Image 1 (cartoon, helix red, strand yellow):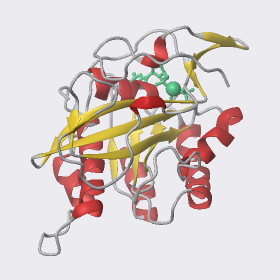
Image 2: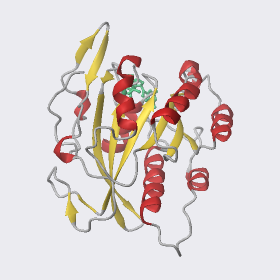
Image 3: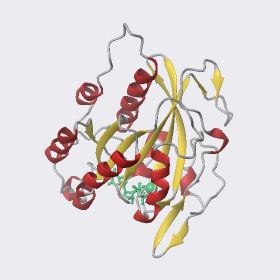
Length: 265
Ligand SMILES: Nc1nc2c(ncn2[C@@H]2O[C@H](COP(=O)(O)OP(=O)(O)OP(=O)(O)O)[C@@H](O)[C@H]2O)c(=O)[nH]1
Ligand SMILES: [Mg+2]
């Protein structure tokens, strides 16, 4: 796996992963970082008034990890860049090598929640790297909660949908049994090329008891919502007061999610 110095993950500029593309075979690849570096927050309870070590004034109360997984090309990196920078990485597909991460602080019900989002490589040859991160095997980010998972397929690629079952088996094997997990069908802006119906995604999600949404990294449809839903669930799991009603992740994404037919994110 290649390593490179990752630019500060907080800026609004080009994504860390877009610089210095290397070449593996005929497909360009996007080098990832193998370790979180000094910007990595611990998962854990609130640390009021704490600022991120990356500098620049990103204050947060609590930090969580989220991992993006799914076949190569489903749009994991684009989803992250859309969420972090509000931009779409059009043009040449640059496949991620190894793993990379970026941070974003969200306001969740009056609390600053920092998400450290790990962008994994979908290519099979990097799978062992991903396995190690499901349980934070590197031990860099110790805390009460394992990384939450956003599992993506591409609605224009049936094979990526068919892989979901294998991904779930892998998650079962390597991740914590009560991991926060959401299924996302990405690229719904490509209506002409769609081969996986929304109902198929819903059916699969229901079968496995997963919250489900369709997204588009290109238009931004449901992207912020997916991360917000995960942040709310993690926050609740970490610090819910006994008197507080339980956050209903399934209901939240069903209620707030927007349909692909709508042209605005
Ligand atoms: N139309 C459309 N294209 C997308 C969308 N998301 C990603 N793409 C395109 O799909 C290709 C793959 O996107 P990536 O985000 O690099 O895919 P990835 O899942 O990170 O792939 P790996 O790094 O190899 O695991 C790129 O050419 C993107 O421009 C989307 O929502 N809509
Ligand atoms: Mg990628």
